[in-house]
Length: 207
Image (cartoon, rainbow, N blue to C red; front, side):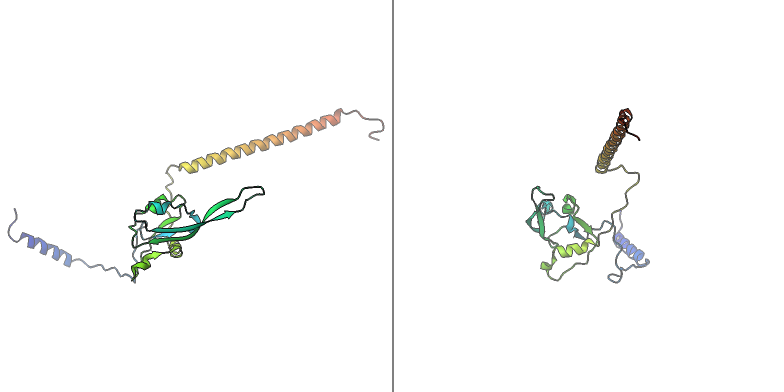
């Protein structure tokens, strides 16, 4: 049961408690804030990994990713081979006025071309300037923090285990082939020596 003026008393109690505490002011921009390692600031582009598969643009719920490309013909790597065509990136832009920082584009990228950067100082006076091209996205790529260290007790990823198994199998196969070749060469040498010993001497030989 509350008595008249209890709400006012509670409010004054909160005010008094706050007055006795030391105020803490963030000295930004003179002192940069200490951001968490997984801060969602902007999206950086590692252009070398981009294959222009368009997955990020298709999956973006805001349609804020703009990609242009063209095809180039790659000559065959060996004589008699076939020519191949590959996509070449012409434009990669993100409109941060539309982006809602959901991270879907980063999650669906199969080639690790997009990363979260903790950079957050990209305000503009004109909303049209918030569409950043690939050069700016490339600059933000160098502000991406290193990934955390792996847990030494964690289970080995299936991809690495499969790759190691295939490499061990190939190494064992190559070792077996090398051993077979060495055995065949030794057997050939023994046969040649036996033939030399069994061959009869002709008159005048050995003088």
